[in-house]
Length: 206
Image 1: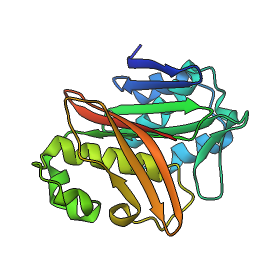
Image 2 (image 1 turned 90 degrees about the vertical axis):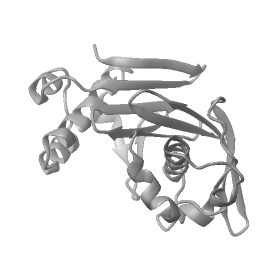
Image 3 (image 1 turned 90 degrees about the horizontal axis):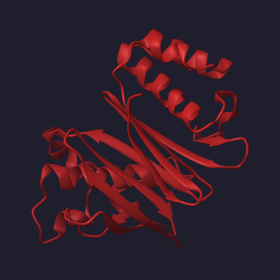
Image 4 (image 1 turned 60 degrees about the vertical axis):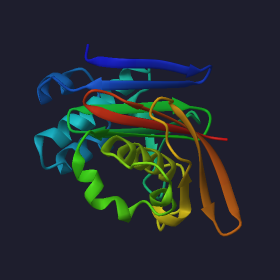
């Protein structure tokens, strides 16, 4: 089974990372897809996009969640019918899912220097920190901000101005982050890691 990480973070939060090595048929035969998921699968153009969707559904099966119980709100954010929160992410041959009763978000990204070319699109205050911004730090900033975005009911969010992350120390795996919007200030416990092939972060609303 291609589960490369299975973390019980707390009594009610669990995280799974899946490395996709199967064919589409192999992934599909392991799950019973809802009508909505079948429609989404047909809409996916590339083979890797189809595999990513199916990998997430295989993770749901591992978490004892029926695909029929995965639903989306009006903004397109997923949740589980029993009231649990869920967030998922995929990049290349990796998929990650986190579930829990608290407000949570997750993001995974393949390691690539391309992130430095677009850093001004999602970083502002962070660019002024007196530390070198290398590829891994830029990716982790993106991971955290994308994870927070997935918890916020605001499609017009500006990653540069509405999300603030403290200076990163890659020897650590935790940082405090905030979502800021007018008088609204929400804090997040943000956890991260750099793996050989990817970076990953997940956030828990404080």
